[in-house]
Amino acid sequence: MATPRIEGGAEEMAAAQIIQGEEAIAAAEVAEEAESFEDLQAAFEEITPPPMKRFDESKKSSLEDAKVRFKKAEAERLAGRLASTEEIDTTAERFAKQNKEFTKEILKLLLDSIKNCKTKEQLLDVLKDFYADATLADDALSFLTEVTRGELQKIAQETADIKLTVKDADLKALVNPLKLVESHAVIGGPAPVEVKRALAAREKMLFVTKSNISKMDKQLEEAENKLETIIDALISVNHHENGTFKNST
Image 1: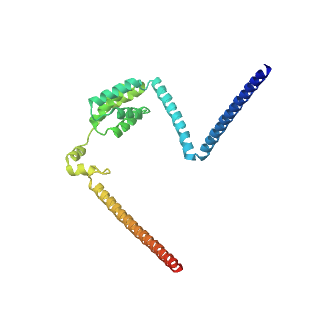
Image 2 (image 1 turned 60 degrees about the vertical axis):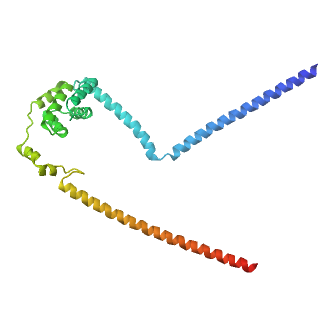
Image 3 (image 1 turned 30 degrees about the vertical axis):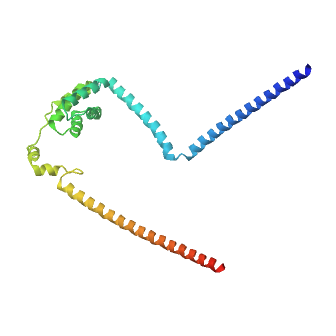
């Protein structure tokens, strides 16, 4: 009766050893995978180009800058220069609906541009950069007086009292078709100066394109001649080998 118990104990010990062995193998595999991952991560860091690393650093820097700007904006509101964010958004949206020449984003950008103005002259200079039209400028000032507070609001109100005048020469130029066309001297505009510049640029581009096509045609011709030479050489070698084989037979 003792023999079966001994055999059973041996089987249990053998099974335990097998389990322990499998666990050891599994642990070794996990350790090896961990080492492989660490090696892979280290290798990735080594091959990561400096610009990418600088890009990651720049993203962190941008985030920090955004936090600083946010804190500064909050400080300015606490200082009593601007209305609350919700009030600014609501007011800008209302003005944009009332006048199709306005957009909510541009009005908010205007507000952001004048928030550091110390005098009405500074505010007026910024305003002219945004809206040269007197009527639009007056409406924009109305927006500014609603969303500013304290000293900044006082400056906006003083600026609103300034009458923006339009010169007679400017009005005459607006009704003169030739002057109106000449004034649109932006890229793609109809002004004669811009049209001449655009034509010269297109002619230069056309010349460069034709030159590039000629170079490509020459390269293609040279490549074709080279290919034909190689083919002729291969055919000649094959004929020679076939003739030698026939003579040997």
